[in-house]
Amino acid sequence: MSDSPAPFQAPVGTHDVLAPDSAGWEGLVATFATLAYQYGFGLVITPMFEDVGVFNRGIGETSEVASKEMYVFTDRGQRTWALRPEGTASVVRAFVQHQPPTPWKAWYVTPAFRYERPQAGRYRQHHQLGVEVLGSDDPAIDVEVISLAWRFFEAVGLRRIRLLLNSMGHEECRGRYVELLATHLDANVSRLCDEHRRSWATNPLRVLDCKRPECVAVTERGPMLPDHLCDDCRDHFAHVVEGLTSIGIESTLAPRLVRGFDYYTRTTFEFVADALDSAQNAVGGGGRYDRLAEQLGGPPTSGIGFGSGIERLLMVRVAEGVTETLLERNPDVFVVDTTGAGVATVLADRLRRSAIAVQRAYDGRSMKAQMKAADRAGARLALLVGPAEHAAGQVTIRDLRSGDFDQTQRTIDQSDVVAIVRELLTKKR
Ligand code: HAM
Image (cartoon, rainbow, N blue to C red):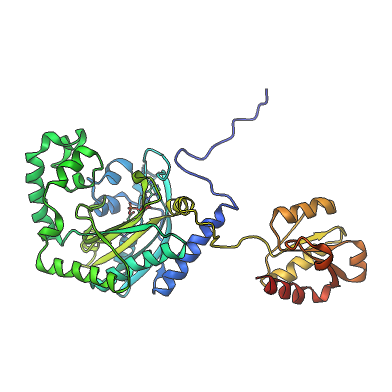
């Protein structure tokens, strides 16, 4: 028996992402970054861990995520931190700390950590693309944030996404509504699921979020948020719906959509993918949080944003049968060098400095092995240099995609390589 220890594995509920699969990730991130730029957002980067209070106060101690799923740890200095379970609270903490000019429009790509029961589409470390806007409660911002998400889904090829929309009202409407809901739940307590029969009073809104059929049956017959909004909140919501309609984005009213965090006020929304199983079909969600900055010690500042899970987006692309790649990551050129004289190093450098993607072989491998590697890499062109070409200052260029070597192979001067490779690549694209 060997003495070497058993190899380590990635933690349960997490995944390594290797090339070529990681090109799908790069494609999503690059598409999102471009759109975010077009919509006037700047990238924000915050630490992966924060004082646990940022999340307890921000997303609410009674929320499922804060109470059951957070990765909390004490460091050597006896301070208690939490790994970020979502992006919003950290970004708002950063806003409060730095007080940038408003409206402040920030986008991010971040891992998020939740101690969940791992299953398809639900992980202990997932990754979100998201935006947050602080400093305005103009419904035009709600429309802009929702439309950015919508255009993003379109840009990555998704066609069967539905937008669910609700308004939770501002604090007073919400407070009044919670009282009505509590009365309804109290009268039906014996019909609730086991968990909520015990815990509904701690935060009645959480029962609306419960997917168990017992709770759904009770809340379906209960009071609905949109029926209890004040005039201002009703107006705000009407403007959001109107704005979305004006740019061709249809929404479905989802009167029980309150989402899992306590910070939401007014507009809340979720994007669901019809191609996925309903248990894990949310590809994005978000809403307003007009009191969050204050709850984190800042001045009263309205805010709104959304987050979308990268893993789920990739799952929906597969489920919808989207085959178009978002980002071509195959090399343009593979240099096959059998001279043993380091020609590949020089050629690769010249090409790469002209923004051409180059791969090559190492370890003095045979011509056959290098050609195989070029094929495996999916290169468009091979540059072949053997001792004869090297002596003549030449290189043979071969189109690996045409399948007709005689027509597409020719020998050229090394000094013309960049120009000719460029010309061939443009022709092929
Ligand atoms: P969330 O709905 O908890 O919202 O997460 C956003 C998205 O992240 C979900 O729609 C889903 O696609 C993905 N996601 C969440 N949990 C998991 C998981 N365990 N495994 C895989 N994917 C997951 C938020 O986090 C809010 N911060 C969104 C927001 C931004 N609200 C306002 N601004």
